[in-house]
Image (cartoon, rainbow, N blue to C red; front, top):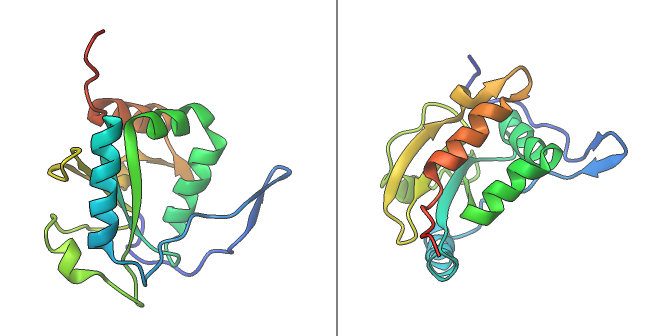
Length: 154
């Protein structure tokens, strides 16, 4: 098992020869405004929304960002089906009011899958998707496929 909180990871790491800069969870952002924008985008694109809750202090959050970069097919599956929205949860801003609308997370990162209108479909503890110092490709792919919006046959 992994601890809920960890020390700060380096801001830039090297993945082979490709520099990797983790996505950020800005504690100053307004998650309500960000979710409203995500709902608009998801509705227009026929996608669902995933709230990725964590922060810069969370080494597993950095591992997840890097894992998507290392696995382009997984990243494409994510981008084709979801609006990915980072929500800060950390010492600078725990976003308690916003996150109180969702089941409590036992660790971070934590993923909440929402439909295009913003209704909660799934609360996902990411430790079930982990393997070693990263994630399990089969489990993560299955998770994204399971919660992708069902496309109508044309």
